[in-house]
Length: 275
Ligand code: MF3
Ligand code: CO
Ligand code: CO
Image 1 (cartoon, protein in one colour):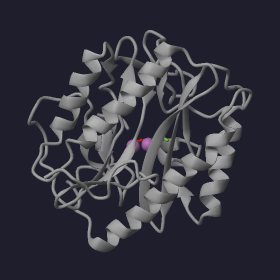
Image 2 (cartoon, protein in one colour):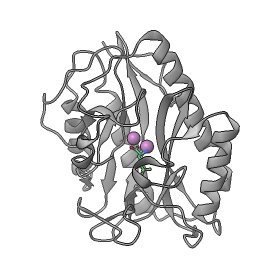
Image 3 (cartoon, helix red, strand yellow):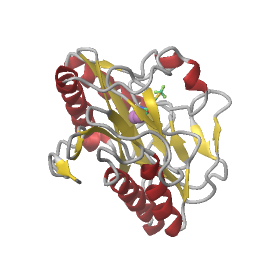
Image 4 (tube, rainbow, N blue to C red):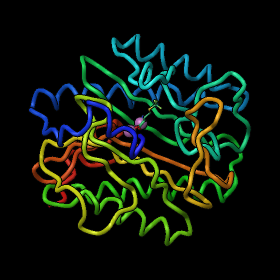
């Protein structure tokens, strides 16, 4: 989401919402569907497919499951997903002329609204013969998400997520996008707090049980700055045209640590005990 502009919307500046047991159940269901959507689309992500077609399949799947794609109509965005290829950092607009090629890396980002609750996640997909450099970027960006998740437990500072992510990414020779960040999610699409992916140690809000938010690091091969496509007003590309990669999960802070709500393959222990 947008770091600055979004703060003016009435859905923000409400402070952090600690979710009730019932709200958590609703968010959990929506997160499950958001992750299932990314599973569903996996076999279709191949050479020759265009991103408008992938988006259409995503839109249908979400609606067939009695949910609504949160991005449709969001600040004028028209599609059920963002599909961001290669040098596109985020908010890639699906289009029939954007055709997947051998060697591409791409992010698909899906947010569902199920019974009024929001679940938000994204993954990278690698198509055919991906260069070792591109694969390394994809792997490091996934590790950045995992490093961020390890900082999620009650009493820790939200800033430590970005502090640890940036430490690692920069040590690997990459840069971290600071113009977009993670966010509270669940009752609204974008809630407080902002979850920066580069931050000072021990800065920002303190995590509490019942908080739900995303971590969604965007990691660049070259410079960290982005530019928005002048024609569509959405597609954010790296300023230097080099590759970018991103992974996103929605998380719940629990009494003892964190639960990765969009992890439907039990990659992370449930709940993950970190204290
Ligand atoms: N799902 C994105 C996020 O992770 C937001 C997309 S907003 C859109 O925050 F309007 F571009 F779809
Ligand atoms: Co998000
Ligand atoms: Co998202």
